[in-house]
Length: 133
Image (cartoon, one colour):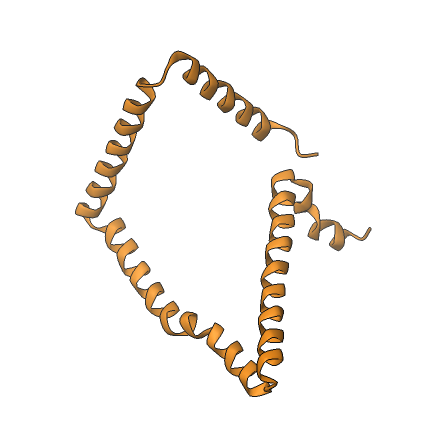
């Protein structure tokens, strides 16, 4: 194996990345199968290449129309929240309320349920600490 190939496949030595990568392959393959099936259905029903072209173009219309607008709105809101004192205070208050709510819910759990949660957290920590090699 050449050095360049070894470097480009190094990320696959991480188990969680391998799982994510395999999931992406399955997901994207499914998306393409759906697209091909839709186009085949349009050809089968209409017999028209123009209808296939229109169908393909219409699939991207929402992204074309609303993608840039959504990006501008997201950038505007995230920068306002991050840079304004009121935005930072709002985020602090929301985090505090969320933490208080979770603590209240955890106190209502039975001892057996808390023990189960502790075991699950320990298991997750052990899984994350495992050597990927």
